[in-house]
Image (cartoon, each protein chain N blue to C red):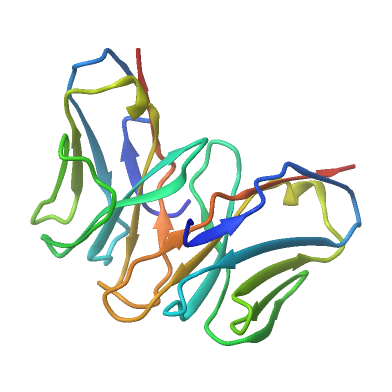
Length: 111
Length: 114
């Protein structure tokens, strides 16, 4: 079993839709959770970062973590064609650990 | 622009050959990470250096090696290349050596082994 899993998609939604992207993780030692966005032919860039259960909002993006069920979500409101990218969830354990990335979900927002 | 520079952007070579990928981290970042990204495996951590010292190893093959130089740039050496080594290789940098810190990724080096 991979430590971080997510549906690879592709996921296609119409412009303006609410998008829900999800990850599950297996390692209880993971304490920090991140979402990276990767445009085609580019490196990943950090979107959201959180270390506690609950919600964290940044503009149209909301990251949600449920440590009891080891579930991570990213919600995108009013999705735009410019949101079309691959979204990678990542987790980090405690001291001495390294980032573990999910395989990514490819999202297409259609105008 | 993340501030992380990787060269070359594209590389095509033959099986059995050796290549070197180069990374310059963001100014001020002491940690350099190397990742391999392929379609079926996602982003796989290879190795991390902090201020010239190896800090962590992931799924790095024995045919691969890396180092970080005094000016903090890093090189990833891939030898005895196989078809399965074809992938995107990303370098990332961060300020700290461990713990929660944002990783800044370069644009990657796309390696094709024929």
